[in-house]
Image (cartoon, rainbow, N blue to C red; front, side, top):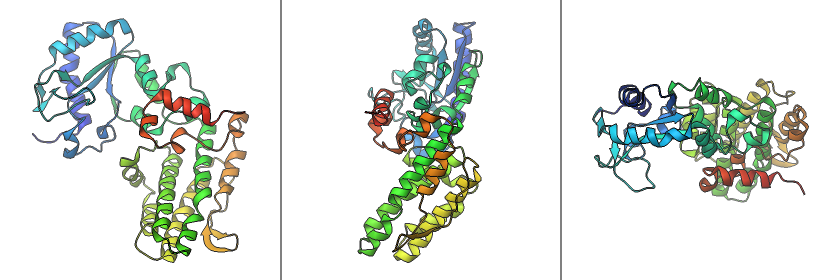
Length: 358
């Protein structure tokens, strides 16, 4: 079998198999279809390696009436083929495996059927069509937003509802955007002086660990400044490298994390800090701040003093509740546990607790 990018495979599977089957067996059915639920293929980053699990001919079908879900599922269960374009379309595997192409002729297929609102609430914890508060935005991991706005819609027979949801989730409102950025810079401000201190006492490994954390924060900041949802760690570097302006920061961080001595690595870190700081000014979301690094008090370490960007961004927020909110940002800026971030109920409880007063 020759490799076909998963998103192309999914679109063809819908157009050539799923749509004709539904039209024949359930004429007049109003539905939307696409691929928005996760996987490297949503970002065009799947390769032949991706085919070993959670990959294959698949589609998501959404209906407006939950009462029709069992009927649509029954039609698909009975009518979908065993393979498509040489790839297994029915799969064997345990209940925790969504798809698996190790063995065909299983009893499961890759087409899910859900009522749109229920699926959105299960995925996000909220139905965006009912409106999104600042708290809703900040309790939603950016990986989820990247998935929902990535991928593709193959058909939207629900009066454009699925397309409209994706448009609504395209980007943060400006004040939420400012808050997420200031929280990112707050993380940098809290750690930017630590790498030099580690190096000063001979802890080169510790110094690199600190720089690695700063690199992650700077890449996420860079993506947010360019209106791109940061993905989870596997694809963070790849997606960041795809930004047209990324090369100077990528190269500087490679030096900062590299085998050189501390002065050389500090020079790389400073270049990365100053470049992302300049991007922040270019975004025009706050009064510009001098992006030049300077000594950390009287110690021989160069830092950005990133707190200056925190305060500039905070001062530019109009919403008083957001302006007074603790500078913690979106939930995946302070939580990195997968079992939390992939469960909307947990993630929303954590976000509410972190910002609770009293």
